[in-house]
Length: 362
Figure 1 (cartoon, rainbow, N blue to C red):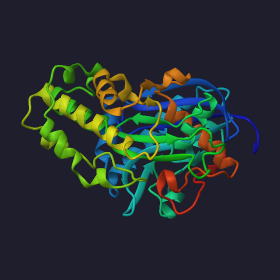
Figure 2 (figure 1 turned 45 degrees about the vertical axis):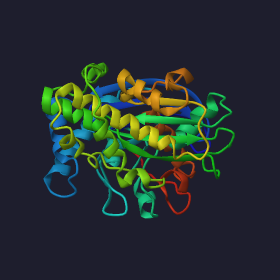
Figure 3 (figure 1 turned 180 degrees about the horizontal axis):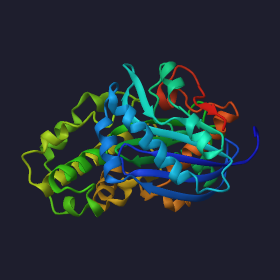
Figure 4 (figure 1 turned 90 degrees about the vertical axis):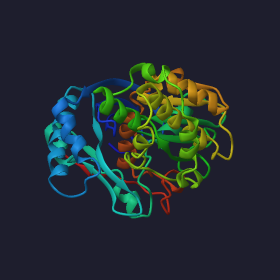
């Protein structure tokens, strides 16, 4: 299989805990030739409750209880992709503490390979963390491949708005993402996670659909200003966050009514992206949004206001913004198979280019 174009099936279950995304990409681990079938399997409410109880838990029964939930959800979704030749399996991140306890994803790739009858590449982060890296973000090499596939010639930025926001600055004139100066990547700060947590606590809803609640509110600028004074925003990249690192934001907006609280948390997410863009030495000519947060028009409008560059959905490049991360792990799986790096100092702070991932045969 090495050196060949393969239909890789990537799967991603993010910290928003909405469900599992899966998408096919035809790649040799360097270029993207075509994207293919895709699918989504939402977690049920009981499954989501099990996963939520395990967030931030390193030891004890909770991670063990979460693992079969993750496995069975992936088996149910991934079994339906007939053309897949290899699978890239991210698993579910429960805790992330680079420089401390490391990173924890649950989901057994070896068992998944047995169930699917396909080679599965998994455990993408451990090798990077073991060499002093943050272990995240891991989609930047795929962002670079997208930019080259689209024929872009000027520096651009990809911003993924999941539970946590992350940014990839890309120079598409560089042939390989591992080349010096090809990519710079880091987490920007909280994105959907605090908003979702607010909606769950106050309204019993999973998210602020279409930003309707935030649209009715007023932003508390004092809270946003204080938010931007945190040491995180003065720390140079690469850098990465755990989903709950900014969980205290809910306390900061506790005295606000629901619309004002939603508007303020949304403004914090947008301001974090703007602060991240300011860390790019060369200003990107365009900013492409990926992830669920791009569907929040209030968040998108605020990012556009702060960004100082045209802000577009990644769909303008012909890619589905809901599936970028799933496709990325399919792409990375083929890179691992071919012995190519999956992260470099500019993406995770790792000491040298490293290829993560464990290969499990069925």
